Length: 437
Length: 160
Image (cartoon, rainbow over all chains, first blue to last red; front, side, top):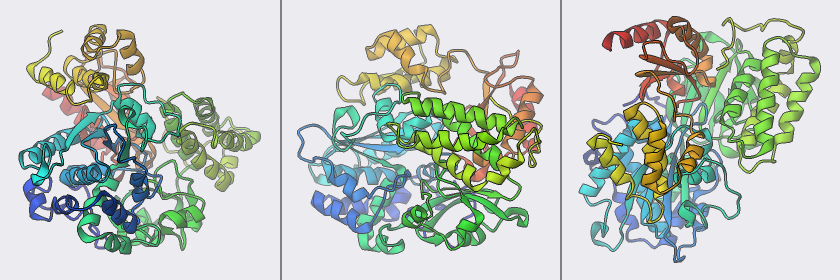
């Protein structure tokens, strides 16, 4: 089901079946061009499939934005080892709630994307790693997988060819870090979710030490429309170097929060005003997170003339990330926002790398003291320095994810930190205390 | 240990879906599914799962301490998980958390004296666009308000 009204500005490619009756059933899927891309791909060469993806300019939708066609081409197809397809459905980046909607409304699109990935790299098994909290999605996926077996879209000798493929769901059990690809693979193997040293990358040594394609749910869901309608058509929906649409999750202080499928390159202000219905209560935009809490925060002024795509966000020294847009109005306390974000990373740091484990814990303490009114002027600089010392010094991006928003908030909202100095109460706080569990 | 036939069937299947020699992969799903049925990851369960996937109990302990959804002590029959991460915070998630603590007289990861309700302040549960949000066991509650939360907590007491 859908939890918010669609917007007329959406371009419905991945979400085209959303809102149809029984959109999750294989009958609805087959009646709306479902599995047509797989049938087509069965008669294509693997390199032709990958070439189509390259033409589409599809970039990984989990947050890093790596070109998908290139990633798939790194898998040694002729390796004697089995190859695996792994789906990252461990959606847990704060601000992001799109994979949930994709699976809930159209699970077969994901299965079809996995099948095509299997054809591209000669893989015959795929695992969907779903975060533990999304139990109902595992039920939906298991039903869809059973339907696909019953109708000959999973199993042996599919559609009269010699291609066989099995798909399975696998539940996580509560760990943000397991959304990081190498930690996910460790977790899939029944271990603690700590990151692996790379290289080798998962394309060569991934699940069960075998070559693996590992992508986000949305990335796989984009594959059937690309194969069906052609890579060029998908590329044309976006901007140069980034094709297609992006499932965008609007949250925070706007009138119409929700998940919307928007063309890459849509102007930020148009997205807020026309898709999101404008700022709530007519307030001013103070801060903007483009794609999940690990992105550097942008100010309202920086959002003018900015567009939602990988390169323009990089130019603005932020990231498009996962599509988790968080909008904060003028009444938001940025010290509290920085504290809450750091509490999250301190809780989720797996403890493997010292700069991340210690850095997030100390930053959390410093920010807490600051928000409680015990901050010193030198702490403002110290917060920035500590965060900068974490950058690039950890095995996985969690350290950077914690440091980047913190650095941006301290630098861009210095005055708000100064306003908390010398025991002054938080000028924005409504709640008696910020609960610290 | 004896489990329900449904859980036994799940376990049997889990041991077949990973590549040969990789049955350890079934450990985390087994622990979580079993916890749902028996209420906690007990010492007995640790030994049972270790035996079934072919590792030492210590290896299971080492893994389970990493995952925040796996609990060594029983939670309430209704585990109320309130998100206070950034998107929910902006929409008053922290106020809901305080309200729940006050109403139930318990705090983070604590259980009411009758064992009925437990509370946990959780990180992002993937409901940001429909914030503030919470989960009771695995069920999502979107667009929460103080009134809705009040009614929800009352109704959990009534249906038990």
